[in-house]
Image 1 (tube, rainbow, N blue to C red):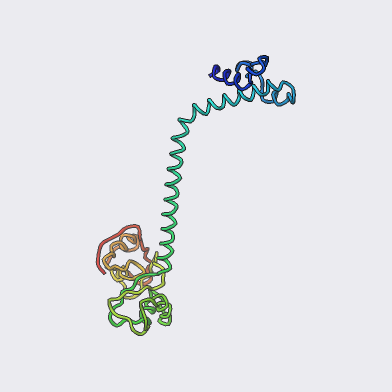
Image 2: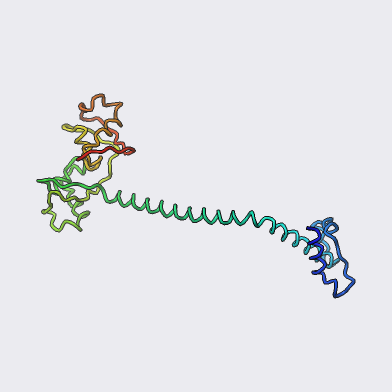
Length: 224
């Protein structure tokens, strides 16, 4: 390393042009501190040039030594950056989808004899038939006449999915699981039962006023 630095200094200082310029070895230059060199002002210009050329040569050799280690890290950094960008994009897409689904509400399968008024009046939707225009506006793309809806079709009811449900007269676990805002699937009643074993000793016995936890962390098969 020292031989390389000395050779570089001899070339840079232009010894051939004067034949008199002083040369310094790396060992000699290393005796000076940067502060000492900077304090020389306009004195010993050749020494100052030699010092900075030596510092540059040392830095260049150190860079050359580290470059093989740095390149893989740069490539890894680029790969991580790309992965991070992909994950961020995926997260943003998932958030957008969650927001879309939340604003969409729940799907309701229209049964024989139902009207928008009746659907809005269900206690697990609005509990108020006069709210039917909310359902109509949400489904204007599929309902041309609010007085004409057909059994077997589905429509969106702009209400959130429930995290808890208060039992009313006539409820049973299968019926509750079938509500659109719960699971929309009567066959998922075991999920309600398992989530509420602390207050339900017999799945066939539930009482008005009980507040059931609606667990969404597991999935059960079944049919509505």
